[in-house]
Length: 313
Length: 288
Image 1 (spheres, rainbow over the protein chains, first blue to last red):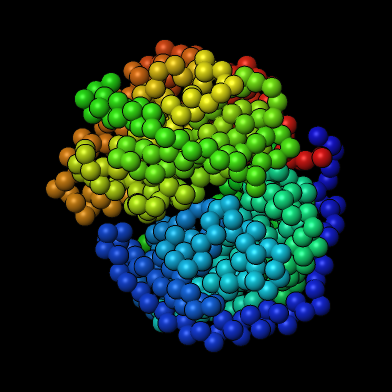
Image 2: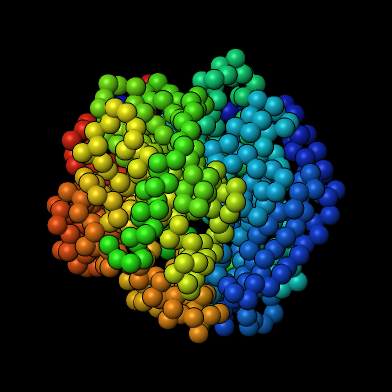
């Protein structure tokens, strides 16, 4: 083990010249697909206090994407919205707890997650390296758009106050939080990103041997000749390159011994965030839990509730 | 072993006598270990998949059965484990890579098939684990006297139904103390039990009787591992202390600090000590 100061790390990510053009085109292609939002009640999971719905919408490439939507059974006026974006391997949570806190809560299941994997299903491990050496066909291109359209789904609901919507998630959810806060910068009211993944991806693969980043090492071990193409595709999709657009109040939390998403990359992406109202929480001796076991969940709840003023049930 | 488990364990052990396919998996092999895809049939001729990792160092190696957790994805075992132990990581029926006939839902799996004993899917899921352990023990160049099992409920239950387990590392058991822990508004997956109660109130007594077969307290008499580690939160320590008192082996109840790095070190150090091996290299901070 070597002495180290992860805050001094300098990312090797570069911003491709066609980055903005590529994502404008990707978003235009996505918006050309009608969202077609659908909600189906799920009585089995609903309670006297919370209504649960299975959500469906259409996204990039015409794929049908699933999600869970929960809201208080009784409310007046409009509700603040809470978009929860999932981690890499975990299934999206059913956000009844957020509805109990007074939110209209949407938990997205982007492509490859169960219920959204009928067409696109590279699996886990697999998603991170799906077409990783083909810059415009990389698997995360559509995946990112699914998260963006999840936000559009939530903000389009009549009962949601579109001026009071937050985004939150950890790990891959942390990455998607930063993405949505970047590409919907004029609409996201506040955000909380934990242990953000998909940041300085090539650097991460050299900093750790844990999955999912180990997928990149696995790929390059078998295909060393593809390294330049891989770096090119990853630069085009690296969250590091989006976040200067973020305008909303935002908090980020990282574990200083995170073997899954090395803290070096968390410091690096935090430094790039455009918002002036930003705060980084670092937790010693924490790994990918990034402080959740020592009180960060309360910090996060207080931050989001403080900006959105939900009325708890 | 009771009337519920005896025929299931027999069937699961018999399933392990069937054909087993083991193929190289170069994409998940590295400088310290080789990876293989293992395919075999569980009870009911159900096709199952597992990862097998074998260190490149000389054996015999300690075998670890890494029991699947509650989720659709089974992770490739951690780097340091693959470097040190022969690790079998099973995808039970319904999880990805073992979902050709049945795909588990989340939420949903925890109550799938309730209330009946025979229809509850977890009986077959436990059988998958028992079959997998037998297949692990068939592998060459392992020290079968130091079999270790790690994971949550499926680790604990499998250890309870398997003879000759040396080390059991477990905790956060979903089936523990259900009546107490489902009061109020628990998070998922425990909330699945309340969803079931609310929608099938008339069947809860029968479901509860079925779930007793998976209750850690009911299964404690079968857990005869030489060494056991329970990792738990402070709020549940009393439960695990009570459980530990019923086990004949050297049992430790460790309260997690809530700091993932330190808690992970505690667990992996315990496993290495229990199995008499040197822990594998740390994979972060990594210096190649």
